Image (cartoon, rainbow, N blue to C red):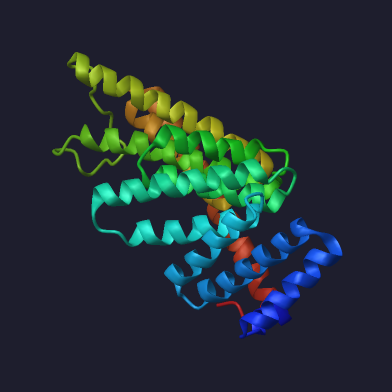
Length: 283
C-alpha cells in the first residue's frame, strides 16, 4: 500500500495492477485499488481536506462496494459537511444522505464490532441532529443491546437515553413553574387545570418513569457512574414537582438529597484517587 500511495506515474501504476491481476485475479486487484483510495482519503481527511477526501472514499466504494470501512469514512465526510451547512433544507437532505451511507456500512459490517458500533453510533447522532428523538432513542438502545456491546457502552447509552427523558420532564415542569414561588425550585406544578395541561402532566410523568428506568440500567452496568447518580437524583426531583401530597414530597426530597450526597462523596473519592495516581498533592 505504501508503494502504491507513493507512485506518481501512470505506467508504473498500471504495471502494479497488471501484476495483481495476473497473480490473483481481478477481484484481488480491485480490492487493492479500493484500499489505496481509502488510505489516500484517510490522509486527506486527517489533514482537514474533507471534500478531497470524500472523492477518494466515493471512488473506494464504487470500486469495492462491500468495503464497510470505506462507507464509514464516506459517511464521516457527509456528517462534517451537513453540520457546517447553514441552509436548513439542504442540511436535512445531506443528513439523510449520510444516514443512507451509514445504513449501508452497517449492513456490510457483519461481525466486525468496531465497524458496527461506529455505524450505529453515527446513525443515532444523525437522528438526533434531525431532531427525530424516537429514532435516536431506538438506535441508542440498539447500541446498548447489541451483541458487540460491553458494560461501558451499555452504561453510557442507557445514561444518554435517561438524560434525554429528564430533559423532556424538565422542559415541561419549567413551563408550569409558579413564577411567584422562585425560592422553592422543587415546588408542586399544577398541571390539572385543563385537558391540555393534564396531557402535558401525563407525558411528563412518563418521561420521569422512563428516565428512572434507564438510569437504573446504567447504574446496574456501572454502580459508580457519578453522572448517572446525579441524574437519578434530578429525576426524583422531577417526580417531586409532580407530587402534590406533602408527605410524599418530603420523602422524594430526602431521597434526592441522599443520592446527591452519595454522588458527591464518590466524586471526591475518584478525584482523590486520580490525584494520587498522578502524584498531585491534594488541596
